[in-house]
Length: 274
Image: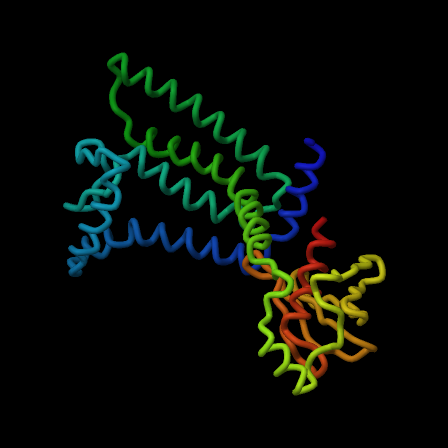
């Protein structure tokens, strides 16, 4: 069972696309800017009161927002307390960092960092509870390191699992093309003659880099890790692209439909992921 789960996760990791990682990085950085960028603008006197109010209201359910335990920029109070400020920065930057750092080192580095930060934060909390002076920067820094470590360790695998589940949900269902669509395509001579899809499935030969579907053999020529040109008898007929958790067919020649290419792509990516 563990071996199966490990293999499944490894396949999911290989299926994470560059575009998917880029989208996550952009989203994480956008959340960081949305949370904090109003502060320097407000300090410069720019009219961002609505933005500031919106951020405070959005953060209210997650933080006590006590001004005495929060950072200030001029007269403007941060929307989160010192510890939550560090935690939120750790979450967003940890997620972004996990998308660009060599994945096999993430778990060890992230969990080690989280354990050390938790231990130091606990010692500092005990010191403060016993009457020691408050050190807001300590709370912020180790809150940052704790959640940076956790999200750095987990985020890539979370994306991999969600992408693979999304790919499974969005996979083509055989026999869903309407009779009118099939007859219209056949009249234009664009459909490869084949048996009903419910009776046959694509056959993949990874070593030969071929997919045989409906009596036609497609040769898969790599363009990138997530994109392949499909050739029939040496002639390119389209591309199969794996993006945002699903295979997609792109028709670039005569004699094939998008549905057929998508089925070929789905089988091909499932085989090389597995």
